[in-house]
Image (cartoon, rainbow, N blue to C red; front, side, top):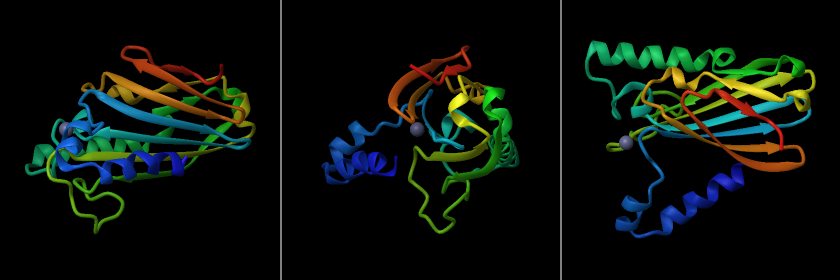
Length: 175
Ligand SMILES: [Zn+2]
C-alpha cells in the first residue's frame, strides 16, 4: 500500500507548479478510503480535504472553530463507530492515528500547508478472522460536507475499487 501511495506523490513532485495546482486530487466533498484485509488484521486509511470535516482548511482561529475541530477529531478517533465491520470477522479497534498539520495532529513539526489543508487517518483492527468480513458500515457521512468516498479494497486475493455515495453507508468487502 505504501509503495502505491508514493507513486502519485513522486509524479506530483516532478510536475511543474502550474500542473501541480491543476492536477491536485484535493476535491471538496470527496475523500479517499483504502481498506486492506489480511488474515487477522484490517487496516483502513483515509485521506480527506479538511473542509469536509470542519468547513475550513487551516488552523482553527476562533473558539467555535476549535470546538468543531475537537468534535471532528473525537468522532474520528471513535473507530468502532466510524467503521462497523461484519460481526462474523470479530474485529476490535487496535490503533488510530490521525495526521493533520493544520490541526496539529500527528507529525507536530510538519509545516502546515498553505490553504487546502487535509487530514489523514489510519485505523487498525485486530480480527478473529478478517476474511469473514463480508461488509463494513461506514460512519464517515456523519460529516455533512462529505458527499462521496472513493474506496480501494485490498483483499487477500484481489484489488477492487468501489464508490460510496451519501446516503449509502455499506461497503461490500468482496467481488
Ligand atoms: Zn480545499
